[in-house]
Image 1 (cartoon, one colour):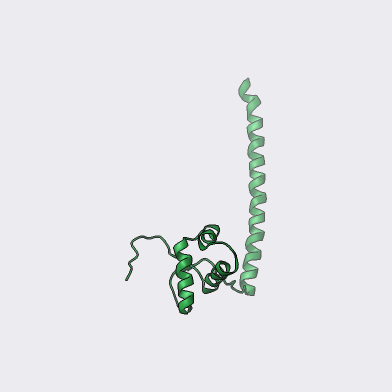
Image 2: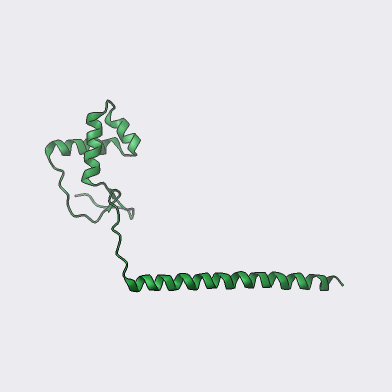
Length: 119
C-alpha cells in the first residue's frame, strides 16, 4: 500500500474525464503520449486508464482526494442572507464616500498649510 509522504494534495480525475481521454486515444490518429502532453498528463496515466477501461475497473469510489473536474455546488441563498448582503453593500458604499471625503479634506488641509510654511 502506498503512503503519502508529502503535504501536497493529490489530484484525482473523474471517471467521465478518463473515459473522454480514452475515447480521444481511440478516435484520433495521434498517440497516447501526444494526448497526454496536450492535456498536461503523464503518459503512464493514460496507459493505465486504458488498461483499467479494458479490464472494466472504472467504478466511482468515495475518496478524500480533490477532484479537478467536478463543479462546486452552489448553495441557495435565503432571504435573511440576501437582506444582510444588501445592508452590508449599502454600508460599504457609505464608508467609501466617507473615506473619499476625508481624503479630499486631508489634501485641502495640506494645501492650506503649504503657503504658510514658506513665510
